[in-house]
Image 1 (cartoon, rainbow, N blue to C red):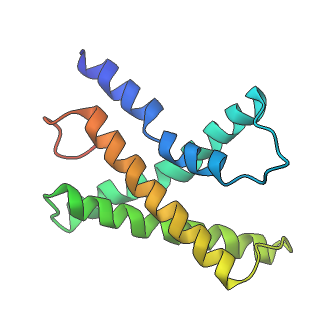
Image 2: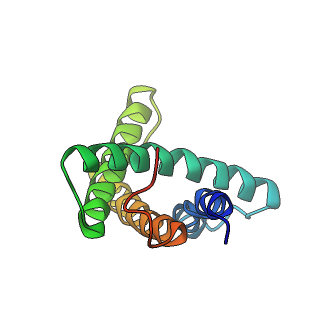
Amino acid sequence: MHPRLRVAVAALLGPTVVLLLMAGTRPYYIQMTPLLTLFTYLFAHVLFWPPALATNFIGHRLGFKSLPRFVILMCVLSALLSVLLDALGFLLHFDPGGWRDISRNAGNLGVAGAGAYILYRVLLGRESSAPSA
């Protein structure tokens, strides 16, 4: 596969694990229409790329060489993003739920972000040591 095509496929399909998390944890009364699926896919990109790019930058600064270290860093940064978004919702008077809900959301997004990062790196191929920013 051509390297540019591989990068494009990885960029488009990487956040699908986050998309599956959001689709799987939606309330039962919300139907996944094609339009809602498209917006959920776009929101999955918003939730995936900031931690992924930060993982790449911070991981290289810290001298990480192995995929598990990058994955753990991605998990932590995704969970931190989730907590920050829940705090922002709380400040804007949305009800993010109690601390149990906030910690559940952070854990779910952390694990989904780590899984999405693994998928992204696998789709990029073996020759890349880390994704380019």
